[in-house]
Each structure stands twice: as structure tokens, then as C-alpha cells.
Length: 275
Image 1 (cartoon, helix red, strand yellow):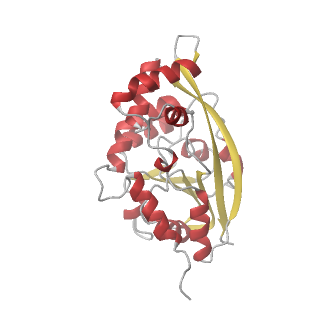
Image 2 (cartoon, helix red, strand yellow; image 1 turned 135 degrees about the horizontal axis):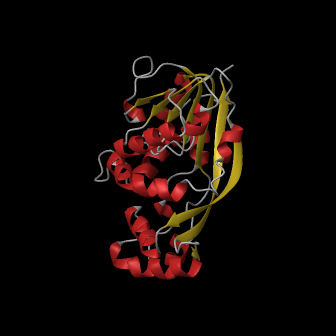
Image 3 (cartoon, helix red, strand yellow; image 1 turned 135 degrees about the vertical axis):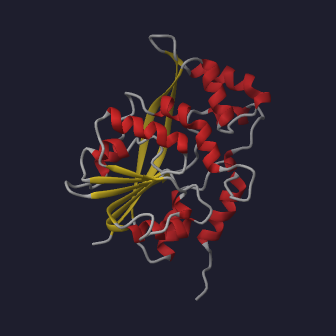
């Protein structure tokens, strides 16, 4: 029986519209190489409780595979709990920060595979691990292939964290739309329900947990917040003045004059067990 809706093809359509098609001008690896320093400064803060850690069943002696680990927001604390962490991360800049974070924490029980998940071969580049994690790393063209590869790499459990709903974390995009500026909500990535339906079509019946996540992004100054928004594609350089006006209206000044922007999002944990 043919599929009434092919959710993987729908995912590809939405990813191409977002500009993450490998044939498009935007190279995801180059994008994250450029953003690594800013990502480190603005996402790992004392307010970031990293609550995903409390939802992942990692046991003493386990091996863990972290796909798209970035600067090690999950990999570093997980290394304290398990026997070994294998990290798949294509961005050299992210890896440099991750290594430094691991070393600063005194952890050496990790290996790094510098490849895109799409290019990783199970059984060659990486072997099966007890637990497999993909946290906000599903910005791939073929979601079905990526998800089934996560499944093949896992002995016991898979945890995928992804966006639920609109991805306007600090309210800038909504405010710009009110001013008649911006591309609207269609500019975001497809959300978690597409991944759930792709898994269902592959006869994997995952558990879903929707969560609210709030954190503070910290920048040296408001101009740095605007530069980050431009780099992320949220606003064009021509409209930087609008972004600065908005951030000045919502920012909180830190003790040393830094610019603190409150952010929030809804996210989904999609998980399934192999045993």
C-alpha cells in the first residue's frame, strides 16, 4: 500500500526551503564553523540547566554516541557518567571548543569522528553504542536515513531532541513581522511531528515528551546580539537597526555591562528502546 503522505519527502521539501539542502549555497558545516565561538558564549551559561541529562538513561559502564555534539553541552557531563563517549561532529571549530571543555573537566574517555552524520558508516566509522543521542542535529536533508542510522547504531536506546512549534526563541522574528519585516514563521525548520511520523512509517513507535526550556543568551553588548542574529539569518544587515531596537527593549544588563537576552522554546524528546 502506497503512503498517503510521505513524511520524509515533506521533510525534504521543508529543509530545502530553509536552505539546508546540500545543493544550496549555505554549507551547514561552514555555517557552524563560523558560529562556534558565539554558540559557546551564548548557550552554555549558569542558567542552562541542561535538563536533557536527567531524561537520558545512561548507566555506569555504558558507551554513548553523541551525534552533532557541538561544543559538548551534553557530551562533557555524560562523559562523567559513562565508560566512553563517541562524538560525531563535522565542524572543526566546534570540535576545538569541545576538546577544551573535555580537558578542562578532566575527561579523556572520548573519541571524535569529524564527519557529517550523513557520511558516517556504521560498523566502520562508528560501531554500536548502548545509547545514541542526537540533540538538535537533525538539520539533514534525508531524515529517514538519518533516523534509521541512529537506530542501527544503538544497542539499547535512542534519544532525539528537536524543536516543537515555532522557533522564535527570543521573540525577534515575531516583532519583525509586526513591523512588516522578515520572512515569517515558514522560515523555521520542520518540527518534531514530522520526525515522529517518519519513524511511525518505519514501524518505530517512539515515546514523545514535550518540554519548555528557558535560558539566557549572554553577549558582550547589544551590537553582538545583533551580529549573532545576522549570522543566524534572522535579520539582514540592512535591517540591523530594527533588531538593535528590539534587543534594547528586552535585554537585561549584566553586572559587567553585558547584554542578556532571555530566550525560551518548546522542545520534544523522541525516544525509543531497542531491548
